Each structure stands twice: as structure tokens, then as C-alpha cells.
Length: 209
Length: 209
Image (cartoon, rainbow over all chains, first blue to last red; front, top):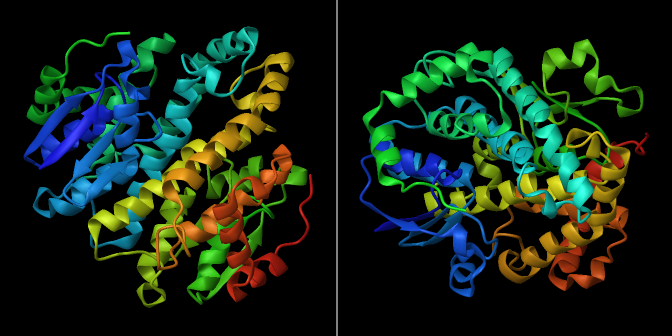
């Protein structure tokens, strides 16, 4: 039985949607950020990084969204969530997910997680001020160079789609208008029509903290 | 014919080593950071992100180290550089590489690339001051929770090894002693004994700029 450790509205939503797209039998386990449960000893035993998502499997625990997404695609091959038999297309998908993880999410994280990279409150405030510019630059790159239609990687829906959707939903935190990126906006609308996406959104309680 | 766009001493070294471990037929193409070639129009046509590595293949161009590493492992399966037939072990490797990319490399990048995340020179200086702490915390986590022996993922050498090795070599930039992390230090020594690693180091000119 798979168990996804998540917090509402975080990047864990991508894995949550992917599990529903795969029609997986899984359990959702909320990690309560409002009480810093992600840094409590019990959760650090699950994921020593103190982050979500973590996916508990019969073989052990997995972390890092791109790795979890690919795992879901691989263990539910009939859901066709990744181009598993084409190394180039698979790597293109991995590259897309990796950019979301290591560049876009990181740009976003400078808004509220600046203490990871500086101690000075003025420096943390300076990081916050720049996220509208740095996050928008990432989305401009996605809009101009990476996003295709109807889905992120082309004609076939993949695990890259829930990941892009999840991070797209963070644009309002940076006062960035989704309409600035027409292809991203179309993608976001298309995602909202999917039953798996609606089911995931419905299953996550309102974000706290 | 594969062509790897790289700059000496950067994270592209991981892909460079992996190509040599796979005994791949490939060409190295230097991107000269000292003249900001990575942001010149010609290179932006290869990789719009203006970063290395980029791997040119017959099917197109790939970016992002974890994606390139997995691609190399997949197209040279006899080199046995990833557990391709075990989705859990494959995801564990992906998770390791992803942590190096999205957390460890990002912590390191705050030393000289702070302008990505703040404009204020004082904030950029504050970021620089914290990298010895934040990078060391990453390596402590690797030492305590992730690194096995003799290789990063266990008994079999994988593409996670050249990636860890590459980032380990950045510790001196943060005045972090490798001896603080005995398992990482052992891994680094073991890597230096590999012919593919020595060949890659020999092939890279001294870093400029």
C-alpha cells in the first residue's frame, strides 16, 4: 500500500494528482506544517530532510518530486504517464520536471524560506522582493521554450503536467498574473477539467500556516 | 554522435564522467564562462537557460544533470550505471541525484550566483556568508542518511557517484574540510582511483573566470 506524506498546496500535490491519474490504491497522510510536524522526530524518521512529499512503498520510502513522479509512472505503466520506452523522450520529461524542481520551485521558495540561504532579516526581505521577477522569468522560459500543447511534453499527458499545474498555482503568491503566460494559462485550465485533478484538490484541506 | 556542452569544474563534470564510464563515443564542447559564452545567442539556441550541461543527441538536446545522467545510463545499458529494471531502486537513485541538484547545488550556488535571488549587494553578501553552513548541512545529511559504501547507492556504482564526486569537489570553495564527512571522503578517494574519473579530470582545462 502506498502512503503519500503531503501538506496541502505544496509540491506534494503533483504526486497526489499523479497517484489519482494512475488510479492507484494509496493513502494520504497529512504533515501539519502549522505545528512544524515536518521537523518533528517522527516525521524526520520518514524523511530526514523534513520536507514533503515522501512516498512510503512496500520497498521503502522515496523522496523528491521528480523521482516520485517517475516511480508512479513506472509502477502503473498502463496509465501511460511517461514515455517509458523512449530514453530521449523520457529524459526530456525528466529535464522538464527537474527544471521545475531545481529552478522554478527554488525561485519560489525564496519568498518564504529565505532562512535556508541567509540569516540577515534584510537579506531575507531582499529575496522576497525578487521572487516576482525570478519566478516570472522561469515561467517566461517555460512559455517560450518548453511548453507544448495540449500537454507539457506534447500530445500525451505525462507526470510533467501535474507538476507544472501545481507550481502554476503558486503564481498569485508572487502577484504574477497567469494571463501573462497564455500557454501556461491554457494548460492550467485544461488541468482543472481533469477528474483526477479535481479529486486531488477536493481531498486536500485548506492550507494552514 | 553525442556532444556534451560543459565548462570545467561545473556540475557538467558529472555527465562528463558518466559518458567516460559508459565508454561512449562523444565530443566535448567547452562553453567559456570567462566570456559569458553561456549567455551568448549561439549557446542560448542550444540551451535557452544559459547553463551547462547540455547534451546534444541525434534526437535533440537534453538539459539538467539528473536527466542527462539517466539518459546515459539508459542508452548504454551494458555499462550498468543505473538499476534500470527496478523502479524502486531507480527512483531512489533519482531521488539522490535530485537532492544533489535541487538542494546541494542550490546551496552552493548562493556563493557566487546570489544575483539570481536578490539584487541588494548586502543580501548577496549575506547569502555568501551562509554557504559554509548550508552546504555543510547538506553533506551532513548525505553522510548520516544517504551515502552507503562502497558506492553512493550501495554495492553497485551508478551515475549518482560521479554527481556526488563533482559536488564534493566544491567543498573547498566553502572552506569546508572533506575530513568532516568520513564516508564522503572515502567515496571521493575511491572515485579518484577510477580511470574514467581521471580521464575526465585530465580532459578538462583549468577553470577560468
